[in-house]
Length: 586
Image (cartoon, rainbow, N blue to C red):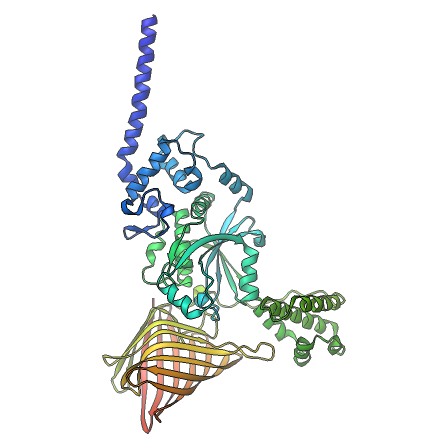
């Protein structure tokens, strides 16, 4: 009996050892298969055969021998060596491996308790993509920005956290920032900070509207996103302004949640924030949309409700309460609400010192407390950015003389384009190529116009900046630098602007010029029309001018017709033509 018992024990030990070895052999035999799986490549940010994470500390293998298979093999080796620390370093990897290769783990092994406690405490209920619209006074924000909001309670978003990806820099010089941003000269990092701080930054200080897109993510998908976000803390990737930017890297985070939507693969040569939102919409990942107006838009709406604007304007400059004596209490309340917002804006921009700010604010609030309660301010919602045209455009024109011209621009919006879904008065193009009759005419590296409204309360200057290669007097090519400053006014959808435009042309015989540029623009339904005028005085004595009427009619989601009737004059030579064009947006 004792011999039979020992024999049974021996068989059990042999069988158990065989099963264990078989399990490990099974894992090894599947190593290649698992290393080529889609989700493993997502966790490594693999695209076109290489990882887009540039920080070597993120990987277990050294750069010289990195591959998805080697990285997975080293990860499994750490698990088999019972290195428990990787549960907090790579929670997303461990979570995935527990699902696809559970035989590697015991039930109580490889749990990052501090992360699990944090997830349980924060109890994230949803994820929202937030889109602050364009802010042309900052070169980092000319296309807008996107970040994620982790919603603990969708009804109280101010207590949520924001997940942001941005270049790490203190650079204030716009040209240096643009150059280094285009060439990968900065490191990009994820960061997590309170959402109310982002509202203060974008809505109050920079006066930018914010669109919030609540995403369709399950609790399981949110957990995967949080795991991957945790393992990306302190990990950098080279930041590129057009490609590996804030919006693009958020796609990797969202792909770690979904796993099967191939979001990063949709973009190659450019990533514009609004295009990533359109992609999420096409993938049916957007559940609801909310609009959060900027403080500037709130102030503009209050101005429209105030009847005694002359008194209100004087009050914003002096804060003398006696100016309000002859208006009724409801009007006083509106004026006080407006002035408090303007005062806070001045403080955020450091135009008033802290002591003076507090004294003035307290005086205004004491007086305001005696007036009727603040009424709910109804702010008209602008068109959703999803309704705007796509950011790239190819255009072909044929003139009444049979001549043709072609224009291609990868990004993103100029005077001829419909403004629906875009910030009115904000125009920006990069790398726009213009060819006329097989002859290179112009290449814009960057062209920016900011036509901000100037009115009684908000005296914002309009400006332009262009860097290009262009033909001068229709002949020789020059590298061109153009600036401009002036003003723009808007009334009932009709906008007029006037700019003074200094110019410098660098080439074999460098030139300079001074000029004026003006325009009258109007939008109605699916039609945009305008009259443009430009006149330049060159230092070689030659004068150039152009007067033009145009009309753009959006005939379909991605198509528009364009008419241009114009007259060009160089010295005493005049040419006039009618061009008929077709726009295709993609």
